[in-house]
Length: 577
Image 1: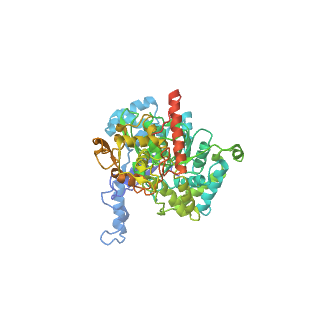
Image 2: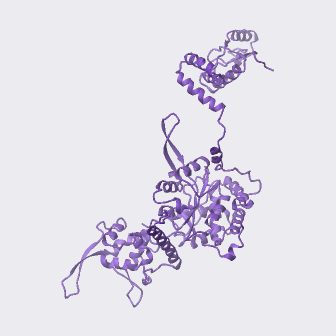
Image 3: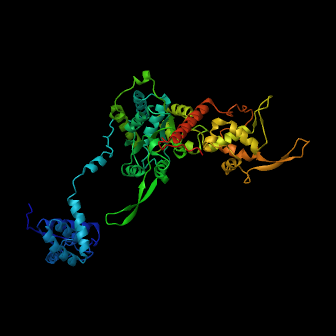
């Protein structure tokens, strides 16, 4: 047993460079022994000398005991006393009383050639490391946000079984169509792949639940998602700062409740963070922060995450375009009585499924490229691609189930973009609904006045709402068609007459100007043979599902308009154009 005051001789290898890891480890050991009261010496081994071959002849590396012993004795006789490093002296200073420290700090600064302030700063940092402050009540509250890691999954992995268990358990807490639960289960499984460095997803769709009012099950749905997602975190009060820092620190899956209240028009920063979560290459947040010494530093946070949200009404268009949306309805009393009353967070089934999903994701090396419907393309196709890929891996009836879910949500997941609704109205306007014989005919041109009048008749498209409930004017039409039609001059000129009066100078639009936009933005493109004539509300070609989605959209607009007029607006908004 080595006691205090023991002599220790360290044989240094001359091949170890001054700043090599071996020399740094040697100095740490010397500091430890000296602080423990040992008397340490180190041999002054010549550079590039390997002490392991001193007993051998350098010519043939054969043992040469007589010469080798002489070299070893010479080396040991040249040993010198070891000294503490600067870090070792700093560690010693932390244990001194205040008066002794004031006397020693000047000597240490002079001995090592540094400023006294530098000594004070290093001693303070070392003292904080050796004597951390007690955990305050605020720090304990912050620790509640740290996700709890699950024990590893030890049973066989079967994705289809885990998805079915999740669907069955979700339906015990929530009244919703089965394809809603199928979609939620696939998305929840996908959250465990988001941070995989092997799969390396580039886009992860957000998922949202909306309703026309409260008590529709949105919060319960979020809790079901969070209970089985990868480090799910349900919050009803949050800021942009806490959101991206929590994602960066713990790689959580945020489940944001009450989005209609939090995401008010002035909260553009939170909207930017939600948008950044959607695409991996853009999920970076730069912030300038103040340090303890008064200096400032630029820091980058990584906020790539799967994100779920719930709101009354519709959130801004930027959120809608990045989300798959489930419109929820209140449960009937007879349906509500059959639901579980407890919290999904305490469900053992959800906890089991969460571990099962995590084990499955760890074994996935890549996602397949599944067949998808032709109408799922661009950003909408990117949003659905992950879910179709996971369904393909699950096998069985899951590819068919996700296809059914996509088709049923096709008209209800979100309202059409403003540009799509405007072009659909223009396409309907160029359809001659007054033709009584045969299929509807396509008009070649319309005057600006006539085109506006036909757009006003199509109330279900919500064009007046997009114009803040003002009338549609020539200026409004020209500005909103900018970038959509091919002719940079927009409206055209021609002369019309009935043969009796002189021709009149008319400004308007040709249908050929919109052919490219029809093909790019509308599902049926520019070709419109046999189209149904426009009805009283101008909704030709619009399915009942689309009419329902438009009705929900307009109800949300009217509710926010009424709250603004009455002065009771909660800050929620809908961007329509």
